[in-house]
Image (cartoon, rainbow, N blue to C red):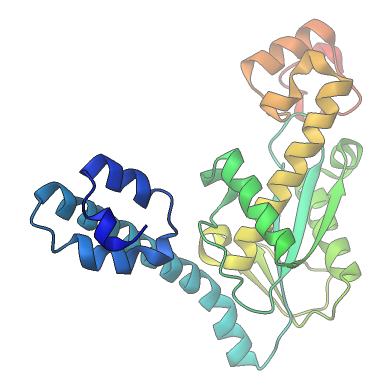
Length: 266
């Protein structure tokens, strides 16, 4: 629609049209709508400007998250940084899932954050963007039997170590979410507390790990529907604990996590 024709429309029609255009085209329309003598149309331009400002703020936030890795690359004169995070330490059932991500550059995927702060739909959207941009990542899992044998802390770091040792590209530095490094991996490492909020690669790893584990639990839900794993993802909700007491344990339950909850079943 030509701008002259658009300006002849009422505010609702203009809003409807604006909803169909790309935000990248906003500046052109803001320029013309903002000089209208109608207050309602001026307000549309103001609203569009605010959306542009928010988009720019988000781009800068993502750029700042990647800057942690870029600064390390520049400081150490390196290229290949592996970012590690995990999902699934707390559940009563299912595996722990570790993801390693190696970014060549800022992929410019917006709204990346700690996976726990994102909706399931947003995590899936970001994961699909990761696939489309061919970001280099690897998944490693350890099942409930290994968790029971080695404890969840050791199992998590075993999975991280295995992933790092088997990664398909030479690693020059590892960034790990948390406060522990991998003692049996002979590569320079940095533990970053709240890394999934500070480091872009770690945040992406947390999202991939979460999407991967959630998909696994949905598949387990079809095998053991009485526990509603598709909804609780293995975490200790009251509904899940009631199901354990009613039906007993299934093969993916972590016995070491249930000693104090259902000792009579062990």
